[in-house]
Length: 182
Image (cartoon, rainbow, N blue to C red; front, side):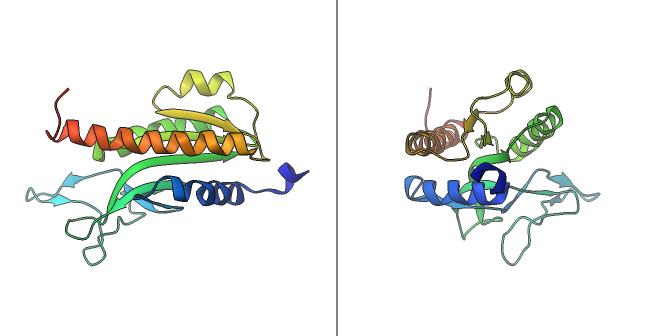
């Protein structure tokens, strides 16, 4: 019965509350926007879709996507204030083939801007990952299914996964920007 009453937003809020202490020093928020496009204008100037005053990516106008769950680092001395580490898209109570295709495309677009980002798919209220999700979800870094009841063992595993994904993002950043060799 709890499953029927819980919404996707409520489920995602519960996950954020559980994960917050485990991803520090990174921050975690819901419904933050990330860029998925950078382009050059007719004079060769990069247009980023970032508010020049706040450094926040602007949602809408074909430049930004709102994330269900975003783990990020915050900076104040750059063109943007958000350095994303993990995006976790959440579906609750069911998932369609269309959902998987749309989120996989979104993952590709966002990674063109943030190549060190870890992008995952969280299926809430499901006891397993459907086969079509595994077949079509090859562009996700992680896929997990969690019951609506969020058992302690599930939450522990999810928190551990998020910590590992944040560490993987930092390692990728170091490799991509020459701070560490293979």
